[in-house]
Image (cartoon, rainbow, N blue to C red; front, side, top):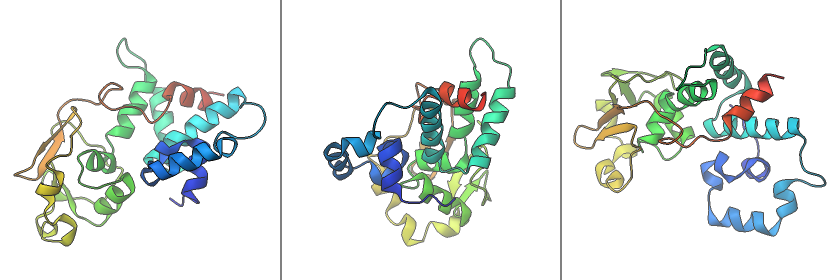
Length: 206
């Protein structure tokens, strides 16, 4: 997906949409130019607020409009239960993408890097190489690094480099075996949403 100028987009949507803008340098620049960061004139309309929220979530996960709208459509078709709303379904679907799980497991520094890692065949699911970043990960799936890839500079001293990194509570990682997976379904408490997903659903309900 072609993104465009990341700093310009992040100033409009917020630093969290791209890992490279989550820096002190960017925060200082945003403080110096508050009008550029928040927009000029009056505050956004309800439609404008919903659009910005949608774009923030979409860019955070690095999805095209077509991909993202497909996730939203599937979530909106889901019949809400007492403990699972359409917003929960959307959040879970986004978090369980293989590229996101690879990133959350600290196998890659960013979601973009995780997507490339999967596309280049460095990641296995249940022992088999996969090159599909959008693949959904299930509870019993075992995510690992392809044996032939472990010797590459990309994973040099990997165990040492990741020993102090924290794995989200809904995921598991075995440093010795260099494999992990999903141990509980992600929730808004265990995996902070990229934005207000209810607002996103309202945008597509118009």
